[in-house]
Length: 431
Image (cartoon, rainbow, N blue to C red; front, top):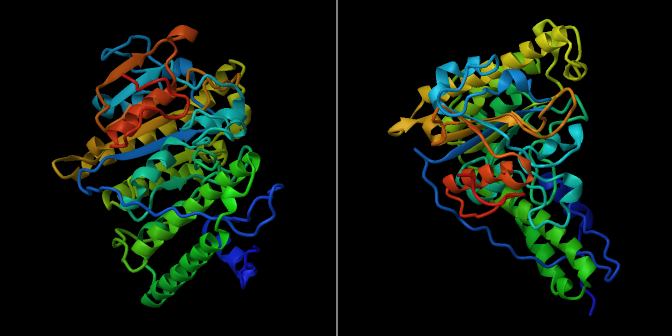
């Protein structure tokens, strides 16, 4: 029995692309079909608001100078290294870790594993692909807020575009590229006419999704095992569209928080960094989101700090003292802005505690040694959110004692209220 064709397939393709990229059905050698059966009701999750757990991750592409980053003495008496000095005001709110990584290689092409532990090209046969911890959490608790997560970065620089956040279906989450766009997302409320139009658009898109599932019928039962794996990827894309649509429905007629200041202008990644941090802090404070990432990418230009060389070429320093001095200028600036962000969160009241107490803030990189471009021994700071004890933790090394960075992510997820025993390449929960 043949299935009926959609009345307007061109319109369907257009609308689905507008939601989450093209959802064109993959080619199925065992069966030629236009639609696919799927029914994934959106589940509601518990929420809190004031005092709710939050998570922020900050990373860069080229790491930090390990000799000037890591202390020598474990515990609370650790030394204040050159790159940790900007965090002195928040020393009691941070933990510094050494010895954590994902046990992989790839240089630039493995930096994107910072929050996942999994190389993109090796993720196809994994249940959760190369999903990053921010998107993993967003899938579980993101429906509680207007934005499941906020991904902030740039679309320029080394290898083009920030790649720190990935979904379970292996799709890179494109970043919000500047303070002006982030400000609009957070505070610019659409007119009543536009909100009404959005409600109508959501209804149309919901109808199209219903049509897809209705027309598909028994397709998944009629394909072979190889094609079923392709359909599983397609189902993941459909589920992502459904989640986006449900959130849009819920918030379409709700006004956004009142803007606390005039819309900022985009300048450059270096000068914009303080404002990006401020807007992320406001996003958490207004409960617009509980999950955010900020990647300091290849568009972070040394010229904006008075250094007339490229960031990438500086990273291959070859132990040249002048080059390392330039790198320390860049890296110190990044740590200074991160320190100010922690101070800002600590100053915001969140019920009976501070916003920093409610927020686990991860800082680091998927690059370990920038000169040799290795991905081991990653620089990791974890602040707030019940983690900050003013300690330096030097964890096991070697194949037998190695502790994966993903073990720390399991612990973060559990503290966020997500019931999981594993994430990425974890071997347990970090203790």
